[in-house]
Image (cartoon, rainbow, N blue to C red; front, side, top):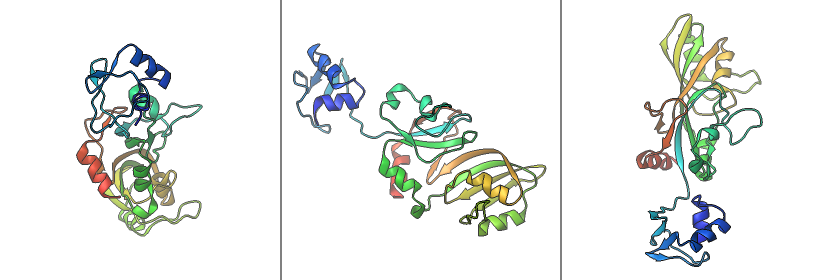
Length: 237
């Protein structure tokens, strides 16, 4: 890979700005000041240092966010803030995007990456990646609802959902439940409860595939996936 392309990809500016870095003797390759922006470097073998700090080349980033309500699961929006606005500029530089979407008022686990292959694998209907949600429901959730969800329910547009696993945590005027589904239609959890005459008042995604939301992440916080978490996700491809 060309040196200027590597440094530009890592956020050190445009190729023109990288050229100025070399002129100011800010860049070393294997202990020698670099003079030619077009020189080729081996990202696995060569040591690249900028202003005394080693540059570890990264092509893809993988982030876990505890999405807060009020943010759109998109890379940009003309009217609302997006989850990308919550990222540090250094992470924004890699142009990550949310894997799937959570509604504006929904909280919880959101994966952000610039790895299109992994995103496709996690979202592909053929892969049957389970998603676990916690929700508060207006009204009493019953065993009959469990049975209906297990069989699949018909949404208002006529779509018949795949079976879902509904667990009642508490039942009363406001019920608390967990629901695992294998697909991700628009507003699906809310629409499934509408199909049985109930309304979701609070929704939070807790798990996607093998990945569980880090309970130490406050709303709006995020962190890189660990190597173990990433390996487990990729093993499901």
